[in-house]
Length: 362
Ligand code: NAP
Image (cartoon, rainbow, N blue to C red):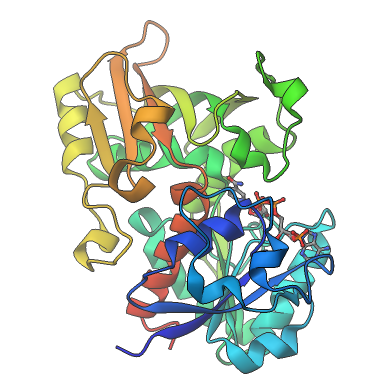
């Protein structure tokens, strides 16, 4: 198979670096284009990340000498790329939206990690195991803008990836969920680089992450929602309440979750069986980045743990544990997902693989 030529916007950041390391030997995608802010533009990639390469593997040889471009040089990207992964950060979200739209207008599919387009009416917020049917909106998006080949697809926030798939698996098995209460313990890499100052983080827990609780409560409602009259309509049957905290862990967002079912309540053994057997479209299509089992239940009472479980199945599986009855809700459990892999670059790659397999990226 001829490989797709891929660009990474925000290639020097925490998520951009993860894309580069995960794509090193990808069977379908070849990284040919890298872009970041004007501070990095004009340097080779190796120079641009000197003293700030955070991956555990060396910078891949194939990208070291690529000259970093400015994200806003959309025309340059259009000459070289079949599609782009977007992982750049600017405080002005409208500007991110504008730039991503420019890429789409020039015919490039944009697989985005940014929050700027997550609530755009005709942009799908995708977790391939849950809502692949939302890709249908792409044709409407292209029609709305008059784009032919380009379009935008986003992935949701990293904070909700640990619990949304286990909750969805139960809903799909016939046990709709009514209320969810979550407390997240989120890793420092979730704040990008340099992120939270070490003096704020060491020996400490910070009980606030700006905007994160709103995303954790609201984004699942779009993911579990429907397309009605060419727009997304939120799922109105579920209420979510979240507290998001930052903890001194490098990678891996842990969450403590309490759930209340709408009507019937499954037995504990049945829930574990549903989770362990859950498979979906990425597994059926054998997408290269799909975990064999998206949810893995750990029987040990002291798991999951970020250090021990975040890399399960290439960092793409969600690990759950400590399922027990709750005196207020029906059940409580703990869940973990790797924030820069499943929650960012790995999730973006899985989205792109689905878009190729479904014929949207050609
Ligand atoms: P980061 O480490 O701070 O990296 C930011 C990137 O954006 C760098 O490549 C930077 O380039 C570039 N950039 C900064 N200012 C720019 C400008 N004015 N124009 C163009 N590019 C600019 O952030 P990150 O953690 O990788 O996050 C990137 C995106 O992914 C964000 O939207 C974030 O919300 C999202 N995300 C992150 C995570 C996570 O776990 N970290 C998870 C899910 C989603 P320079 O190096 O040249 O400054």
